[in-house]
Structure formats: C-alpha cells, structure tokens
Length: 250
Image (cartoon, rainbow, N blue to C red; front, top):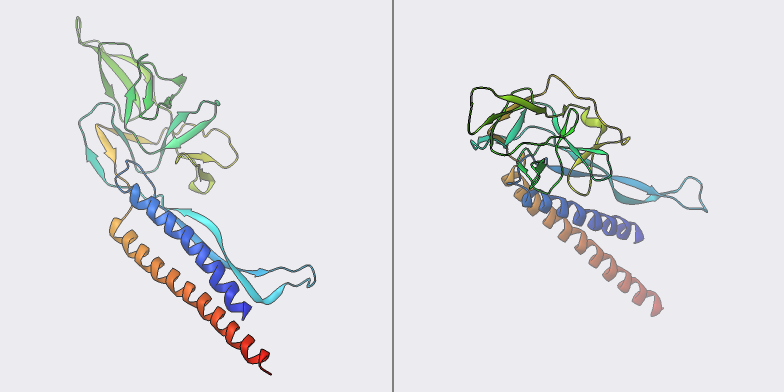
C-alpha cells in the first residue's frame, strides 16, 4: 500500500512545483529577453539506515534539475536609442551592488538622474571600464559592437564622441545559473570575459522565448496529472481502511 503512497505523494508535490514554473513562464511571456525554464523530474530510491542498499520498492519523485531554454526570442523594433538586443549568442553584463557581475538579455535600458546607464530596476550596465555615464543634452547612438557615441544636441553637431562601450559576454550556457532575481551568473561566481564577437541591434528589443500556447497545454496536462496522483492517494487510503476493517472483524 505504501508503495502507491510514496509514488503519488512525491509525484503530486513535484507536479505542483512544475505548475509553478509554468505559471512563472506564462507571467513572463511578454518580458523582454526572458528565457523559459523547465523542471525535470526523476525517480530516486528511498534510502534507509537499516538497509544499506535502500528500499528498491520505494521511490520518490524529485526535482532533478531546472533546465533553461536559451534559444533566442523574436526581435521587435522600438526606435528607442536605449533599447538594445543581442544578435545571436551573448549577454549584457550588469554591475551588482556587491561588486559582482550578472547577465541579462533584456536590453531595455534607461538613464538615472546622474546619467548612468542602468536597467529599469536600477542596476548599472557594465562597460569596459565600469558603469557608463552619459553627459546631458546629447543624442546617443549605439554601434553593433556596443560602442556608445554621443552627439551634442546644440552647437557643433558633426563631432560625435565615444563615451563608452558595453561589456558583452558569451560564456558557456552550461556555466550559467539563474538567480532568484531572474538574472544569470557564472556558477563559480567569477566575471566572464568580454567577447568581441557578440553583436548588438540598436533600437530593438528581444522578446521572451516562451511559447504561450505550449505552456498552456503543459499547464492543463500537469493539472490532470496532479488530479490523477491525488486520486491514487484517495484510493490508497480507501484500500487501507477496507483492509483494516476486514482484519478487525476476524
């Protein structure tokens, strides 16, 4: 009886976790640069101190890993100078408050009151020499290699000057770990080196790579799976009660 309970109980618990992941993907279906995540489950044998080899008839379903879909999303033009998208593989580097680096594909940037280029959550964008500061009253242009040039809005407007260059990186995806803030970091906590091969498209944003229809189908499938597992628990309880009643009458 308990074999059924082990399977159904742990399976229902992990199915709820997968439902939460699908819901999170759907909530970010319109978030620029978002990468879909998927939880992968596997069966693990229950270990016992009394039995060195475990209990072969008892198994838990556990969350073995969280897989990230790193495929590129669609590109949509905005015409806004501070909107940028990485073409192909690559990431924008951000400077976190603790001095470490984090990486994102969301290139919807803005300037704070001090003219520092940052994300919409207030995290400075990393340049080759640190955060990039933009002088007031200039028109910005961003090159394919991440070079940011400023052209004065008044006076001599034919002399653009380079004010910085975005740090673009392309670490192996196997080394990237998604944090609770949605940003990615290297597994070892180091900073990835700049990659000259990463290219940008200015005035463009990358859409989320979440397939909303696929995620909705997955949500329905998980709901049915959870319902089946709960029925198994109910059946196991009913069988246990029936068996107890039979034994108690003898």
